[in-house]
Image (cartoon, rainbow, N blue to C red; front, side, top):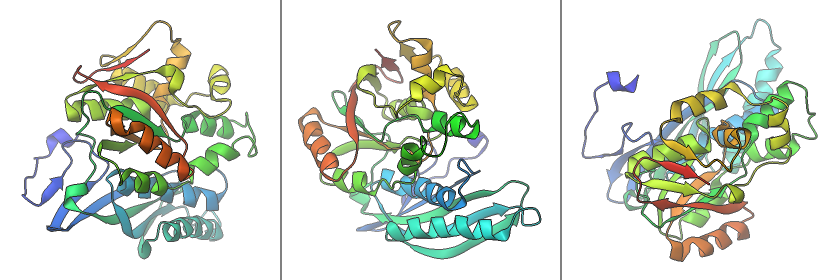
Length: 318
């Protein structure tokens, strides 16, 4: 759809829509650039307060992926006020507010509409130094790829909706989705990270493919090093794979090569759409272990899962 719109050019526009980055970046002056993003979605958990936290963390993540600091946020709300208790909306907003405060940002208000299904998220504004903007386009051959947060939230959420698991079994995934990527972003600021994105609806391979195209580079992943949440493979075997994973796989079928040693089901986990997933960081081999250590010292789960190779626009998994 974006191809129907003209590409805008401005010397102050540092990051626009053409690279499919996580947010837009506009230069205000020599020391400050504005980051703007927006995201919202339907509930993925029954608890309205937790839903508000997860949706807010997901929206804030785009600021962190660009190397920035969130400043302000505005609520985006769709709610069936005639059929659901308005107190539910209050709990959603409280969850979002608490997460905005945790991020050190200010909530400025927002906008609501009547809708048949609840939806919630944020429009977030942040800042970054123009020379320190992280995009998905700068990865270099030989870089190591570091992933924060294990995969599998889409499958866990599907299993939770299908009542195949209970709240207790989903606790780890829910806590992960509500966790800010602030610690990971702060650790990355001390290193020469060449590219960064966060992993959300297009799954690991979808966002990795965007990074490969933007940087005119390729990636090689080591499947054995990719972290997954508990029970994800078991639940996938029981059919708890969201439809978005299949759509992601179909879209990427010509640009992803998965070795025969990896089963079709194992491969499907890499297409699982994530909610408020981790960051994918591309960093030089020399700095990778030190960055990994810095992330873990901040309590961030992080793993080296692959490297950048000279194979433009291709992702290979073995």
